[in-house]
Image (cartoon, rainbow, N blue to C red):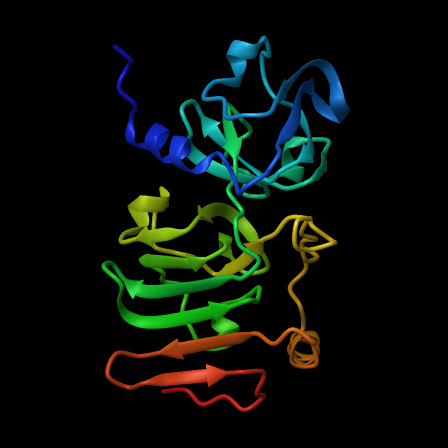
Length: 258
């Protein structure tokens, strides 16, 4: 009889295979700058130390994306690992809460379209923000707050961050409903920026390029919004309040607070 799986293991097993024809390969190195013993993976691993590594100091993702965890069995803090090289721990996270990477699995990316609903309260209630085919470096900048207590990932795969500018602890949202922040293993209901996870099947750039660590000035933030409006690919960000309808930004520069 097979050994029963825990809830995180069941989640990983159900979401690790990727889309049709997807291939995955990641190489973990024991020391920084790709030195020391190494181990290659093409499927999920709930304990990388069983592969002969004492620790993980650097990572090369040859095809992906992947999600890593700071604990065994796909639990704990999450790290998004897209195609590219990570010579030391602070290149795959800037939360500075954890230096470990002890388990990992392929991250399912099965759609070129992206749609996400964020809710203020558990159970999909309260203020609501809808994001379609766009990255949002600041929820506050679009009239929403930092409290996010439930999420619906309707299309695509997303990663949320505790702080603006894609900084802080990361939370992965694959297709499905997340009724409470415990469902994405968050310590508090706080998300301040979100972005899409994309790969080279649909996007030539593939890997995401993070923003500079410095806080953008109001002028640069306005310029980024204007650039979004002129983009050939139209995006939409909608914010609603219960019983008050929608506030909609389809690349409009006039904003009204409810």
